[in-house]
Image 1: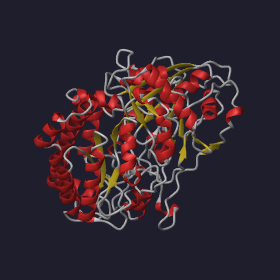
Image 2: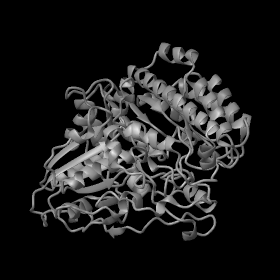
Image 3: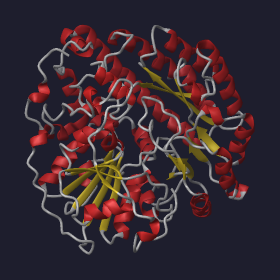
Image 4: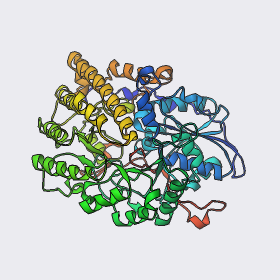
Length: 576
């Protein structure tokens, strides 16, 4: 990158902090708001995607609900909500809060930052959590008073008691494996997932069977997490409670990798009488799915499985195909999915494109061949995203291939936030657009709708198809802008650091009236790490948060017994 660095200009890191100090001590009752941003836009582009909104609503996270329960247990007045594209997000919580917890993905970070500015101007203490806070805590801290990268009940208590002075980036010492039960989270679940206060066939009640992941995919935010199962007793109690009170609802396991200890997990699921079992959704690795285990999935009423294939040339350890690549891997995996289809109706395969190992037409041609072999499957096709704290991010920083001035909210498909190793941006977009178009063709869409699948699957397919077709239109505009504007092409090839106005306009359109809250300097991210902080082959370090030990359960006075807890999405055990 050889142009002047725009990050040298004043940014919101110098924003005056106007927070009114909250009362200190555990006995001081606060008004607390908890909001999770599932949608990233407040503009009219979502009006035609009503089914997308309804589907997205069910993709809430567990941790914001856990934080809400903890705040309530600690004696505070709590308002919990999710924003999935309905109305104005600022109107979803009361105006007279003392503290607000905002959970967001990186895609929704711009909206989170704008909301944080609104709340801070009112003197409300702002706390950031969720996947984005975990990946980019330094960037979050420009807008939030406290950023939490990993959380427990004691840390929430310290925040609400005024024991943590802003600005601060904080974390607990180790991940949680015990959570408020579904019954304890029921007020939050009702808000997030139920329709008119009642569970329906499309309502998802989320829970954990385990946390962490045993695999170390270099692009994944769970690459270095510690795998740990939730206790069998906790899981059993939640399953029995849901089966008794909400027999029509779906269960959604938010485990990053479900069934690592497959036999133990199935034993718990079998503890619920077969006639009372809820259908459930999960994501797992193909490596665990023998045909005998597929039969167990059917017996326990598994409705949806989303294994990660990722690449036709790498990550074979997740597939038990480390030595098998290319066409041989396509054949082997397609055959396995055909077998799995006999036992589980809803299937998805996750892919990542733009990896350094990808080159030429082969990754796209092999995926197209795979889709033709398994038309009943939903192919989840993604552009590699440089999430902070991952080996991919740090590798890109070391090679000077990250686009440092791309707004962090655009670190997601359909945008490219990196200089690709083996493709120019126009060629990559041409091939990726063709592949997405094939995945949502009229022929495949009709086959999916005519299948004898659960109504929730059909609704999800319609929403997914609409969202992908929207992304295709967006990608065509991006590709055409790169082709026609030399400055935009120079930006994507790493020859210029000047952010094209094209991307500022896109972000403005997303944010609607909130766009004026974020200056151009606000939109240039703080790096999550720098290449000189790590040696070759090792991930660079995030800013070291303040650490707070997790007290043993018996040492938490006044707490109710905790038990466990979809949208088939990876769990993120930060504050929310």
